[in-house]
Length: 161
Image (cartoon, rainbow, N blue to C red; front, top):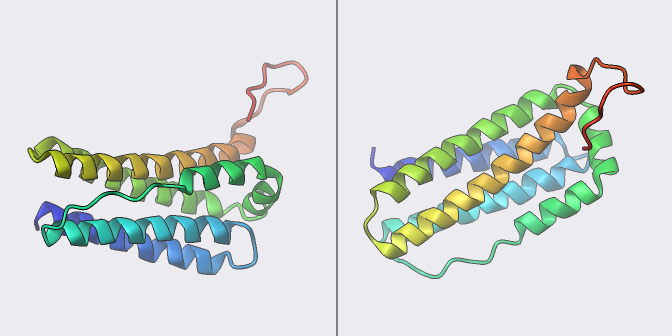
């Protein structure tokens, strides 16, 4: 399978995964999070399809990171949904792995490419996947921290989160 076909397959798998998780979280604030990421993955798939057709165009601005920041600003609401469903931890870990897979794909494509415009596109997609990875890594940290913390909060140093 060619690199672009594999990248497109990876994005399509991500879209499917995030839409299914959005559906499963319709009743809480995580629905919005999964929809935002699915939209990003859909945009990535569109960029790859155009690249497969030889169309190299300007890349859209990414406003998803700003949305992620606002999600963590409203952390109490999101975290109440996160903590109310401990099985979500596995979902976040799986999402993090999906994003890691995407990062690996785009990193390799970036290294293999000699076309400056293609390199710009691969770097853009790699950066997007890194943002998604960071988001899910933060969720994994926030959800797993209470399970891992055994020291007395009164006497031990507490890392802010």
